[in-house]
Amino acid sequence: MSLARTARALARLAAQPCGSSGGLQGLSSLRPAQQLVSLWSYTPAQGFAASAAAAQAEPAAAEPPAAAAAAELPPVYTPLGEAVGERYAVPPKKVFAVVEVGGTQYKVTPDDVIVVEKLGDVDVNDKLRLQRVLLLGSAAETVIGRPYVPGAAVDAAVEEQFLDGKVLIFHKRRRKNSRRLRGHRQPLTTLRILDVHGIEAAAEPEAAAAAAAGQ
Image 1 (cartoon, rainbow, N blue to C red):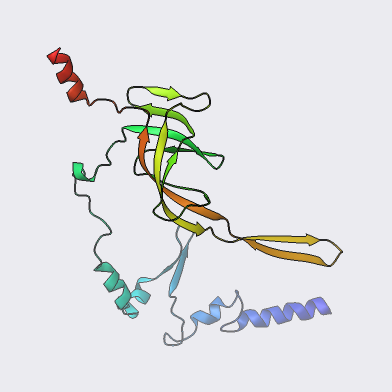
Image 2: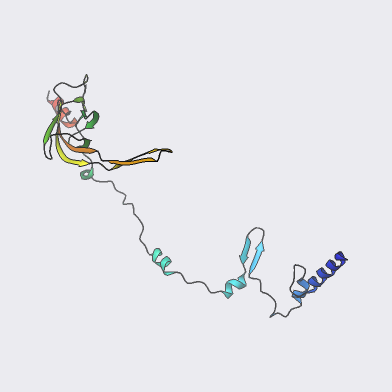
């Protein structure tokens, strides 16, 4: 009895105008004004796409003001097609030295700025002579010390005495209800290199050629 009742219910649903997938016959019996207009068509290759009738029925949306303003923006950059002049070039360093300050080695040339561990008994604008020179070099020669180069020195000026950024140290012991937070700021000194003593700068190629021609 239950199967027969289910079959009759399915037959009634199929006969309804707008029902399940089997109600296509009832849909065709409606008047044209009552029939649904399909706005989307499906193809296996393209998927769902709006029909031409729907595109004509809906007016084109106006371009938002933000998009119009973005279209008027200038380009980010424009290549000029030329190289930078010589006045912007970095002048080559003629001599350099490797000097030891506070247990750390620094390779320096004149006009360099280095940051070292705080030097005691000095103040800003004081002039210093760093005598622990490990190596000297130029375009023509290199002098290596054992461990220091005798007679070599580097002149420097103190520019700043300051404290480095704070470093937080947090200690915790598990299951002991023990926590400790500490902060530390390392004192540092800024030095500007003034001159390097103990080595001569290499002669310029033009001057060397002129000297060779004069001999």
